[in-house]
Length: 321
Image (cartoon, rainbow, N blue to C red; front, side):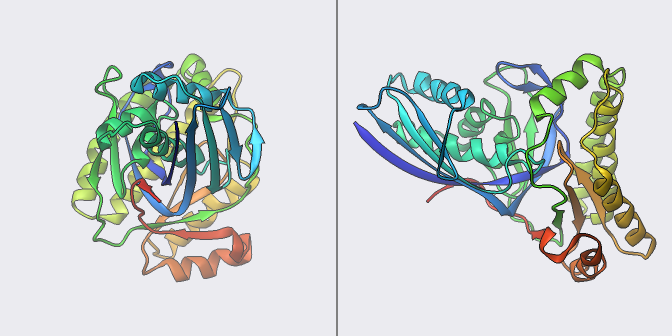
């Protein structure tokens, strides 16, 4: 047997954050999250199951890597298919890896689709989302395009993402400020677990996020960019408060992250509708309208460089290529 399938999945940026697992093995989160899938950043992955192979092999951006997480994920796929066969995985990331731009979301969503198809599973999108979650929690959302909610559930069967609005017919997009594209010092998994274990504010973060989600869904239904931005920015800062209050404390901010946040606040003082969000990395994402994007780019280019400002529109769900 030799079967080769390729898939593409896009990153997503959470407006309501996922930060912490109540079940680390199954990746079941403490709270629901909600994200926007983006067109600019994506991963292309080819999976070849081959019965002549004696182990899994993984290539990232043409370089062979040892990655136990990829093989562990393939074990989940093999278990579902009830087939004991190794695979060659070739991934190309059109997004910096481990820099806070959700590379794991696009990576595992693409891997879930390619691997499941290559081994002979024909999963619906809900089950694909469940499978992608086993590799990376945020990958559950990248199976779908547009605005997507990950329902936390309680177990492997009922923790999956559902699309809220796959076709976006109102003016919302993002600008990513590429402050640092290098791999971060503290990976997301370690950072969130340390926050769960040691931040005295963690339980309040979960309760607050549940309220934020209700408000965010209402703002989306109203197509109110200002409310969406306000809620997302506040939710992100509360997430980062759990890292600053952890013991020992840590942060994903660097001086340029702070400079970017201040610049966005300055733009708001000028009357521009723009808000920031940050994930587990120093890069800052701006929630804004297409109409005001040229002015934002003009004001921020002298500070960060034109090439470091990447505009991303709402993007599609995972597809075969």
